[in-house]
Length: 70
Image 1 (cartoon, rainbow, N blue to C red):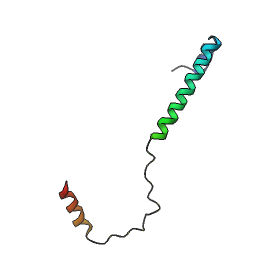
Image 2 (cartoon, rainbow, N blue to C red):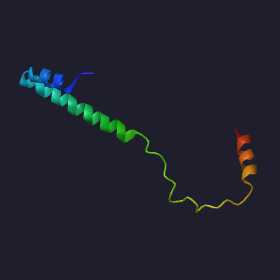
Image 3 (cartoon, helix red, strand yellow):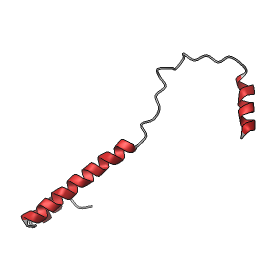
Image 4 (spheres, rainbow, N blue to C red):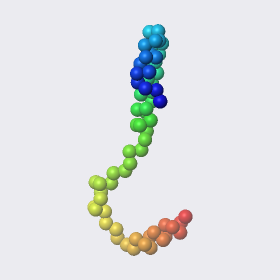
């Protein structure tokens, strides 16, 4: 992995136009990373209904019935 000092030294050796290209590419990579993170699932939060639902009936019988559908 390149060290920050090495990257900075290499960028300093570039012409101004090429430096701008490097900056544009870095901005693109940061934007792409944000897009990927925004698409990642955040998980489910059921804390607002936890303990509030009640079940009426035989849970095991219903589970067996659902399994039979598969």
